[in-house]
Image 1 (cartoon, one colour):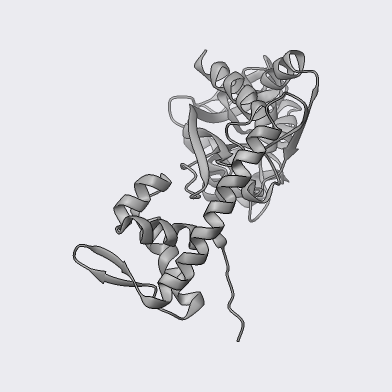
Image 2 (cartoon, helix red, strand yellow; image 1 turned 180 degrees about the vertical axis):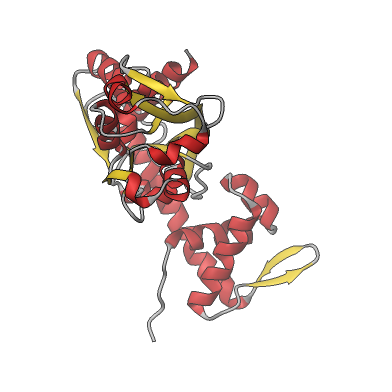
Length: 294
């Protein structure tokens, strides 16, 4: 029966445990949580149907089978380091394409940075990929990701905190003129709402709140992209959640019950360690970090 690797990152994590001897040391080097390291080791051993480590009080010691695997992993790691150096040498100029991925709701936030980058570096073709799915940076699907939520914990990724963001409910003046403005949380179920489609809402806290607290019949429109929700709210189709810095770009929007309803989140700049120090990635990253420090 052929061996199945569900995720090569499991091998990388296990290799670091073998090299350092403890879960804690590997977690620190990989910049992930202790539990993530343990989960990946268990997953790898399950897929291989083999024990790779002897567990004891002082740490993890490699078994004979594990030693064979990690000898190969060490060779692969060396090849990746050489590839890293080759990439840096080949990409020391600001030319070619730069792929940025984020969710559609953040394009309004990032547009100023994109414009600034294009003005400063006209020889770089900036490509922005708006996708709710998390593209694999280690597969070259994108160079930079801007993500909201918990800190990304993939082992070869470098995650830098950009900002604390917050969201609230908003309605356009057009909607308020027609339906009035709710004065209490109890009045909200009487109003029309914009939310997300099934399977998407759990990743967007204000969409999840609507599904939990507003009758289904009052959700007049469901969308699969947060940018489309923004347009619908601006057009007066219903009350809906928005990032405060996105809503600020539309003077016709009014925040609903700001003291009662708010959803905080963190924003992260994510790169893969093989391209993290390339000229294009560094140039865009510096502009992005400067923008959120304002």
